[in-house]
Amino acid sequence: MRPIQMVDTRSQYQKIKTEVDQAVLQVLESSAFINGKPVHEFAAALAHYNGSKHCIPCANGTDALQIAMMALDLQPGDEVITPSFTYIATTEVIALLRLKPVFVEVDAKTFCMDPESLRKAIGPRTKAIVPVHLYGQSAPMAEIMEVAREHNLYVIEDNAQAMGCDYRFPTGETVKTGAIGHIGCTSFYPSKNLGAFGDGGAIFTNDDALADKMKMIANHGQSQRYYHDVVGCNSRLDTIQAAVLQIKLKHLDEYNDARRKAAEYYDAGFAGIRQLTVPQRASYANHIFHQYTLLVEDGDNSAAKRDALNTFLAGHNIPSMIYYPVPGHRQKMFASFGAGEQDMPITDWLTQRVISLPMHTELEKEQLDLIIEKVKAFFQN
Ligand SMILES: *Cc1c(COP(=O)(O)O)cnc(C)c1O
Image (cartoon, rainbow, N blue to C red; front, side, top):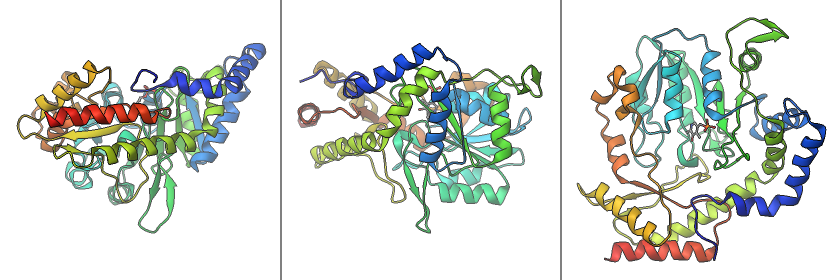
């Protein structure tokens, strides 16, 4: 049995090595390291896959969020609503641009933005909403888009963890996450569902004017060479990364299926453990399991019990992670926004209970069986 890892990018690479090696060597031969043909081909293929009119590749997922927010002409102090229960990149760029992050709660079952909490947070300076499709499951987009329409707000989807997830509108219409809001952002960090061999990111939109503006911002605000119309940044996807991603995109659905299968296997294995809640699936989306995240319940002792499980598994060479140990509203970074004083009982409750198990496309039955056996052993003691 291979050692168990949170993410096994190496075994995945081995399966497509011949094709990937050839594609990378071709880039080396062409030496078009920046803006080479694979960058344009990959962007077109990804736009098509996602059902978005435009796909703008960039250097990473954090840049994608930053460029999206820069394109909206927001003024310092304007408010952007986002969940506290997310990775720091989502909220950090808001503050970086001198905007004000306003944290809202997530649903305790889906871990995604709670539309009720969103409604309550809207004020006169609210300009945009950034829902996060956390752990590979869509936020409730029909409700979020409805709130945005009512209050004339932009929606930027943080799709870094859910590339390939299908959201089903109440009408039955199915749309990929990242293609629903005004702008969608994603990351190709190696551990993401569509991961490169380094950093990468992309921005989606169906709006032609926004697409032009974001392209310009990602390229030093340049309209034509050496003519700079707006303040931008330098954010590009390397040709080598695009060449790798072009190949991996063809496997994305199969990769997401493999994750889903592993999740179902875990679910069955953990059935009957009273103190453990397996990830709940929202009725409106197909979870693609960027993470497989359990809740450990032991009353006031939950965090200690969860941490003990983490230590116990580590003792058996099984990694597990807490995503994320400190929610946004408790980060020192945001203290000046008075975030720490905010009352966010659901977010705090989740933060004490979540634990993520190894999740990737190459999990073997033997590995899953061992993980399940050890988790069960922990709760039987
Ligand atoms: C990974 C991630 C990002 C940032 O992506 P990078 O490519 O690492 O900059 C943003 N938001 C979420 C939710 C993420 O998981």
